[in-house]
Structures are given as structure tokens and as C-alpha cells.
Length: 290
Length: 274
Image 1 (cartoon, each protein chain N blue to C red):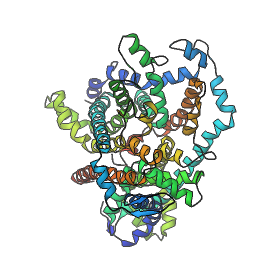
Image 2 (cartoon, rainbow over the protein chains, first blue to last red):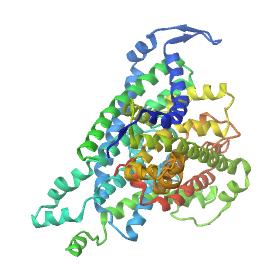
Image 3 (cartoon, rainbow over the protein chains, first blue to last red):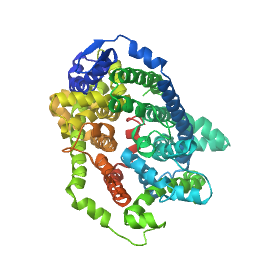
């Protein structure tokens, strides 16, 4: 759609600007403020320059948390995206069964995050949970509070359970927008199932898939509540992701300076990666002439 | 031809879907199963369904004010947040969908960055900010804090829906002598009603599922249900039955509203861009 140039449109954006400034810029400035100061208590602050940033960059703790976080995000993306596409391809296209599938699949998305944690916490226990009990009965050594692999597997399966439907729903919406004529043309050309997927379905899903990956990356990178409920970051530090570590540092130990420096770098990482996705997304939009 | 196309893809019994839906539902079933057992039964025996069906866990929650007020508090701040988010997002989304103005692209991306911001980064500053203005432990504090990610989301989704409304409609209305507020309320709003509904649903959803900020900003008066649930951990161990029942009750509101927006969920998640 052709847009007209109108600088007065700023007035319409003003309420959003004021509100978001209050809820985002002021707190963010507080963080920046802490990140360059040191305190000896009694609300006396001293200029510390970039010391906290230097400290944090040199600290193994942050790099380890970042490594764990990156591994977690990459693993869940590698599972959720293909699985979501597979589910979307198998969903009924119309009718009552399509509605039923949509509603049932969306259920996990609407469960409060700590309840998601609670569900898996219970489900995985070897004494009272179906999953833990079954694995135990099969003779598999499974204990998510003690074992490194058990903890990671539980968290990954939980995230796949929680969010794969999001990828599936988006891919499904992309598939729905493909006219039947495309499939008929492919049939006349005797295209294989793979060719149909590769040259018709995948390109049509590209736009929504970028959004799905963007959302899943952002949200998995700031995951806090679910692992906190299930493993509390343990065993040891095995599942201490960035947000868990940050909350420990800021609200638990009250190390404001390092925590603030940590926050800023954390935010920057997300910002940079998301900017890349955003650019790809807007370019796709343009190419499709939307 | 059309018949051919549908029979080709008509699922007999689709194995992938059946397995996937089972995977979705079994953990939830287990929660429901536990909520209908007494704590004694949960700990003493292992069974796939409640042998000794009891609603005692639900009765505990629905008769104890310190429990059910958690739900009331959550619903109050979620509603406030939804209303505020949509009210400020509507004009902004209109501006983004219709006009070019100085810095519009940067502003749009900046809004999105707030959706990306990790709540953990904001927890402490929010606590200090709202304490210093005397809003700590009020519903409005949580509602305002959640606008951090809900306002950008609302702007995005609404902008997507508004793009779909042809601009000629605006122009015709102005020629007919409609003022902007009258045009917006009388003509434009009905056209994007489904978009507003979907946006409301998403604001509801993300405010409802969030715990970190709502827990940090409240202590007693506005404590959300998600935070109340932690109190099932008592001296005698965890009261699993009540915990499970509380969990089931947090799923219900979502399950109810999801039915109404089922055909728009994907479009909402795609930020209005499908």
C-alpha cells in the first residue's frame, strides 16, 4: 500500500512513546547507571567507569552461562522448527478436525510458565510422575535434579512440548495461503512429494518461518521461569541459563554493578541477533510486495 | 480436480498428528489426574487414574480467600493491561499502517526491541521504580510493567490487520466530511474488530503467563496466582494435590478463550503478517 508522508502522525504515536518510555527507558537508564558505578552501601555511589564490564568479560561465570544459553537455544530451534513443519504438513486442512487440532495444540501456549514448569516437575518425578516412573521401571537411570543429561533432556523436551505448536501454527497458516492451483500444476508436472515441499511449500512458508524462528530465539534466550521451577538451575550450575544467573546475581546477591553490566551485554546480544532476523523479515516482506 | 486434491491429502488416521497430540495432552492429563487424588493417594500408590476420586483439592482453593484472591488479582491486572495496551496501540498502529513520518522505521524496530528485552533485566529497576512512586504491590504496577512487551506486540498485530483495510475507505470518509475521531470510531473500528479481538487475546495471554515481573512487583495485595502456588511447599513437604488443582485452574481461562480465536491464532503470532 502506498503510504503518504505525514509528520503529524507522530501525534498518534505519542501515547505509545510516553508509555514505553516510562516502562522501558527509565528502568534501562537505571541499569546503565548501576553498570558504571560502585557502592559501599548507604546509597553512596562512586564512578567505576567500565570496570564492571571488564570484570564480567573476564569472568568465566558469564561465558559459561552464555555457552549454556546458546546451546539450549540452538538445540530447541533444531528440534522445534523441523518438527513444527512436519506437524503443520500433517494437519487436517479444514473441517471440525482442523478446529479440534488447533485448539488442542494451542493449549500449552496458554499455560502460565511456572505451571508449565510444575507440570514437568511432577511428570518427571520417579515416584509420582508418569514419565519418571516409566523410565525408572524400564531401568533407565533418570533423575532431573541429580543427573546432568536428565536435567537437560527434561528441559529440552519441556520446551519442545511448550512451543513446537507455535512453529506448527505459523507454518500451517503459511500453508493455508497456498492456492490449490499450485498443487494441481505440480501434479501435472508429476513433481515428487519432496519437490512439492521444496519448491512450493517451503518458499511460501519462508516468511512465517522467519517470524517463528525470531520469536523462538528471543523467547528461548530469555527463558527463566520454566527451568527455574523444574531444576532451579541445577544440578550444580548445569542448567543455569543467562536469566537465572542474572536474577541470582541481582536479586539474590544484590551485586548491582556486575549484574547491570551483565544485563546490558545480555540485551545487546539479543538485540543484534534479532536485528539480523528483522532485516531478513522486512526484506522478505518487500520481495513479496506486501 | 479439487476432489482429487483433497483425497490425496485426506488423512486415514494420521500417525504424526495422533502422536503429537498425545505428546501435548499426556502431561496435562497427568496434572488433572493428580488434582483429583488426595495427597495420600498420590504418595502411596501409582495409578493412571484416580481410584478414589476427590474434589477436595479444588474445594480447598475455591473456599480459601488467600488462594482464590490470587486468581482475582491476576485477572484484574491482566484486564487492566489489555485495556491500556490496546488503547495506546490503536492510534499508533494506524499511524504506522497509513503514513510515512520521520524515523518511523527506527521507531518500529525500537518498539520490537522491547518485546525482546529479557524480563530478568528489568526486574530490579522495575522494583525500584514502582517502589519510589508508591505503586509497589498494586495491580496497576504489574499492568504497567507488562505493557513493556504487550504494547509493542499490540502495535505490531494491529498494524498487520490495518494494512489489510484499503486506504480508499479512509479517503472516501474524509471527503464525506467525517472528522478523524468519528471516522475511526464509526467506520474503521468495525472493520478491524477481529484484529482488536485477536490483539486482546494476545495481550491477555502474555500477561497471564508471565511470572517473573508480576512476582517481583507484588507482595500480598496484588499477588498473582502463579506466585501463590509456591506456598503449597509447606513444612510437611509439597501438597501435590492442591498444587496440581491450582495448575489446572490456571489452564481453564486460556482453554476457554482459545476456542473463540482458534482461526486467528496463527495470524496473531505472525504479528498480523500471514
